[in-house]
Image 1 (cartoon, rainbow, N blue to C red):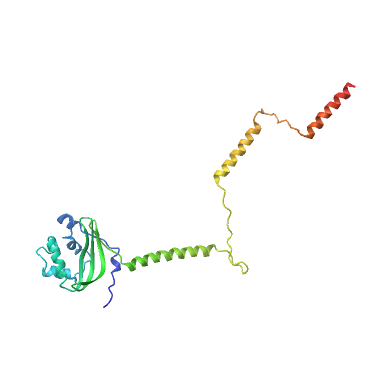
Image 2 (image 1 turned 180 degrees about the horizontal axis):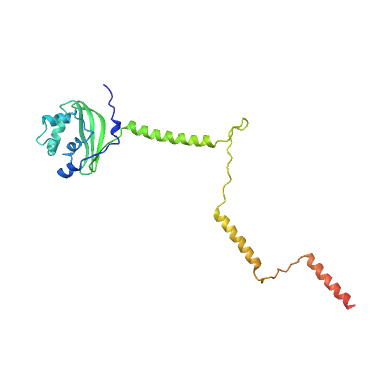
Length: 225
């Protein structure tokens, strides 16, 4: 038996029928398959369509009551082939519909899944498509990283191979501004207490100061004599 291949062209397709919802009101488990049958995801060769055309299900078909919905699922077991079944229902919010191949009354093979979210029908991606998309994204990012390293690689040296020169860390602008403020404070402190045109007197300390003081005393003694 040939393996079923999902129609990948419908992954970007979304279906919505405002006229159906305006006429029948909120979507329910009893009318969701009838709503789904209007979408491009529906298979006219399915067992559901055969039941619709032959009117095997209870009166009202897909618009029947809950007992009719259960009767329809029982009728599907009498056939083999493609069928659509509601596997999850949260009325007026989310419905999950499974497309599967029935081999016997007790054996089925899932083929695809669709979900109806707030009245819009989408096809759920299969595992192969999801993994393929994730791997493609990862490989693309890895290729871009390798290309960036290749573009910035330094010349190759037989002795040392490839060597990247690391730049020193840049100084923080805040630290530079604080140092400038400290310098300004020092300059202001030096000029404090001086009027315009005045120079700071020189200060002589230590041995030089003692020598100057001794010279002044010696000069006074000479004058006294």
